[in-house]
Image (cartoon, rainbow, N blue to C red; front, side, top):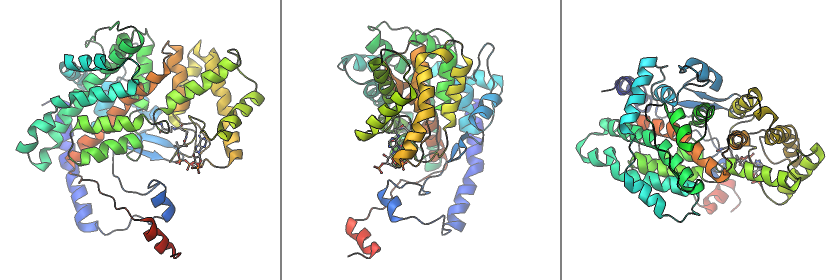
Length: 435
Ligand code: HAX
């Protein structure tokens, strides 16, 4: 058993009594009340999910295993010449809550290398899809096609409930080891005439992904940063919740992740990174590539709102301040010569100055500040990844880290099948005393 798996097993075993005790001895303790508006409004804010992997504070933003984004970057080991920690070290940290040693990170790298071979039928299936298929459809289909490989599905009838975490962990690692190559294949197949660059598993995930994409350094660091900051955002967001929900039926990690990726493909969720770039670029093209004045930008933002569209990249269901994932990417842009002068970055900075005021005046959005998606496309396009309908796939590789770590723990702690209760409109009217 690898150090990671052994450590994880010990942590799961140590954690189980805490969950069991809470259910047995304190199952009737009330966590709060909820309102009609919350029930109609997408279960907003109802405390109905448990995770110890990350927590989203409305004002402070995300903490992974108790650490903010900058604390996470600082704590995890960074290979020589790299500005960001390896994705492998982050995977160890997300699963166990422990900062791994360099030897432990090397072990994860070697383990991923041994699991990384993508079966040929996945590539054949992707090649058979119409070329105009959206990259997210390709990505989700490839994950689902791999379900054939599920260790959980094969072992399910031979193991007990408390052992479910083990094959789920195997499926999660097998998926994480393969997703970067699948993502890069989709990119090169769809946008680079099928000129595929083979995987080099002697490299860490960030460097290997950059080379399979055909983008030179420092894109390896961009990939590391990008995958880490997009990984987890507690359990209530659409992609995490969809993955958890499907896994709660004991569907394996392939079915579950594919469902989560389908949720990520919505424009109010992960696809917002594509929407931001398409909105911003179209606007700049109209102005002949120039950064607009504040007045012109204000006008364009109002035009978008008046046409009934949302301003992509702004607002959040939980956050009430600027998203620290936005800030982490902005800091990367500011400290990168060339990128800090890029017209698209300048326009994004101007939108940051203007859009919150417009949204406040508009008076609807509870949070007028930018989220993760407002900044991410700027970095990608600067490094030559201009095909913005691919951006959500990058988000998906990162998000897989978080949602897969979560479903391993879900199985470890034996969380049951999800089954919230629905009511009819008439029942709500009766509760309101109007019928
Ligand atoms: N532009 C215009 N209107 C907005 C808005 C925005 N950026 N953000 C919220 N609103 C509107 C909502 O549409 C809603 O309008 P109605 O009352 O007419 O339905 C109202 O303000 C209240 O919404 P809210 O409570 O502030 O926000 P929600 O929790 O309902 O929605 C969203 C959160 C992120 C979906 C929302 O802010 C939005 O649509 N933002 C733009 C899309 C986007 O950037 N999505 C990515 C979010 C981060 C993420 O998940 N990344 O993957």
